[in-house]
Image 1 (cartoon, one colour):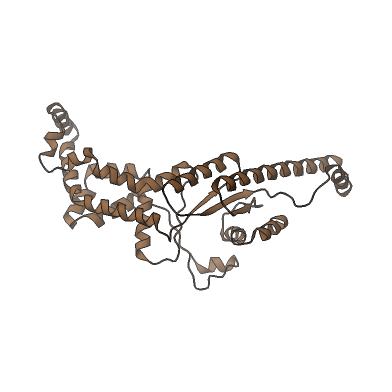
Image 2 (tube, rainbow, N blue to C red):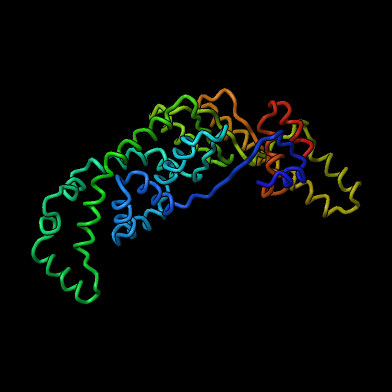
Length: 314
């Protein structure tokens, strides 16, 4: 990212850099195949195979395993001090954790092993009726599906060991002591329940849990407010009884939301047995640029007392 943009936002980089990327699952799958192929000929046979193209395009809609592959690849480059993987805000985030295991199970499964046996794969897998049907399809479309399937699995068989080893190393990276899982959620009831569930899965998998951040929190006002008295003061200050009543009602609604958030966060901390929960307040504007990120940063690295003071002034 251009350092000038950081300077405009009043952020000092101190010779550091910030890089961001959006996953291209199809391109990542192609790269993985290229790395595991024993030679250039096998690589090209797989990448140009019609069956592979269909499979890889389908996987591009389910990015979990490719995200893990890209994370491992970038980690292996050893170019960055910190890597952050942002996962979907739902139980689907568990798919990222289970993706390497699912790949290993797929590779070692009996169904795939049948295809990988280099002994007359086409006619053994497909019966006579299926072969005849595919022969008709070939005459109509010009596509020899049976041959494509046979060529794909024959070429893929030489890559199984590499995929299996890669999945094992990705699992090791996820469980490494230098890895840390942070749970980020909203203060409403459903996101809190999802966060508790995800934390339970992390514990069951013996994965390193770093902490929890609750975003868009309504902070409970520190000062006690007499609503009857404040209504009169607002009317006097605003010179409009209807406007004063709407402001008072708005404040009452905010306080109800703040008390709800406080109760939910207390439940979150209790069920996770978390000694500290980082709370980021509901900011006046959406975070969509570097200034917004810098504002969030103030809360992430402040003490709890500093957060309360910051939230009161925002």
